[in-house]
Image (cartoon, rainbow, N blue to C red; front, side, top):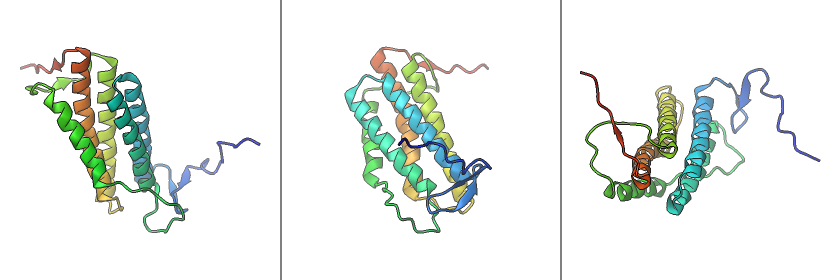
Length: 186
């Protein structure tokens, strides 16, 4: 017997958090973890465009951590869940920082803002970075609304956007694609 993907329980615009609490699908918590899911999809696309095994392995770890983040955001913090939800660790942030530092050692000093583009892999890194920043803004919005959010989630998402920016620059260099400096009209 096959499993049906549709349940029809959300047909009236509500969904359940982990823990059973029903909320509107427009709730900021749903928007936040939906954006994390979108980010995870873009990370998969970035990974498809990059042909470096170490980077591919790290991006798979990032995707795993984004499922962890999404699970944390999908939980009702006021209810005990029967599910075991994985946690982020400070080491997850350190892994990103170490990778950023390693890539930066190979990059020229940035002297201006850089326009996204030059190669589909580079552009896709920038799209993922922008989605990551949107996820971060939503998480900060949750915090401002006094909705619980694990502090490591904010820290991880912030560092991930930094990582994606440096990855875009590093990938451009690796591909021999010139960075496009922004030349503002004056």
